[in-house]
Image (cartoon, rainbow, N blue to C red):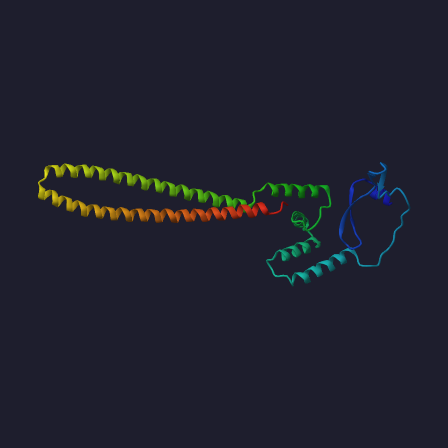
Length: 253
């Protein structure tokens, strides 16, 4: 009767002695690479078969024992940890019940993708390979963070350069205004008498000292701003460089 029931070359689900599920190929064939001969796998057309009775634990009883052991283990693991979620998934995978097929299939797929259990069929193996390819094509979060720091540093540097250019434009404008004022002074002095010239020179001296002090203060403030921005940019570039080096030093998966 075994020949009629299992006499096909399609994968069949079996139960191992320890109660776990497995998939085996009945009446299959493989080619020996060394000899080139075809070797039969699980050829049920050969031999005689008879029914035996085992009085040991049934499959359902062993699964119940597995679930009970996993529940005892789950009580010792802090909730919210990866191990707690893993044991919970293993409990669900070993449970039977009405209407649980879709939930168990989803749970098994999650276990496959996380590498906890091995694929049993070519379809499961293909699903795992596709998931690995998708994960490999996704950008590394550390590299994305490093690129963000690099762009932020470049933006700060451009801002500092723009502010420096604006300061230089203002300085040129101030120099131009000073030259125009000097020309006006020459014109005034040419038309004034000696006493007026002396008073004008003294007033211009005081005004020049005041303007010189104001210019020195403005330059000092501008240099302080540029120095602070340059330091911030350098720190961002250092962080970006460290992130990039750490990413490059990570072993390839």
